[in-house]
Length: 260
Image (cartoon, rainbow, N blue to C red):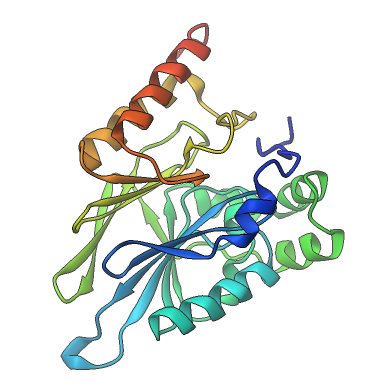
């Protein structure tokens, strides 16, 4: 297992995922499965004040500056606005290494993630290379790794304008020390789960995981979204509450021997 718990999935889904682009989950709420690691990014349109230009809230930023730049261009083309806020669900390289391309965006993460990222750039770089990212791309991203501007402890509601909100909820530690989920209320409600939920492979538990607390984190996700929400895993296809509940039971059984 690599230092930050991301394993190379032998690209079991990468070929298919690379052909999938953005899918709409609810009005103004999109997500994309990225190639190679099948990681998810989400995008939520933001209303401008007084009828002016709005922006886009991005959930996770891809595994490299090149991938982040592609996401940036896609979002601009599809939603007509630039990314103004980025939410990082957890501090693993395949979710944070693209952040620096979103110049001027306010970056949110769970409390403690900023300090971790500020001292762990080299570890993330090595983990990325061990999992298949080109050395020069990993080094470039690590050199400009963004320290989040806003630490979320508990729950934070962002007013996105036009009556739309995004609720950031610190649900860790579980998959990592610093897990953040995002609820976008609407029709339907959409919950971005980060790697607390994975559909395209077995959830990865590396050295920074807290296995005994993971099932409780999934209980919080289910309470947050409810039975009718769409749940967006950190890797794989969107799922429903039944899937999250089943994965919660699998993890509870898998980690039964871990103490608190």
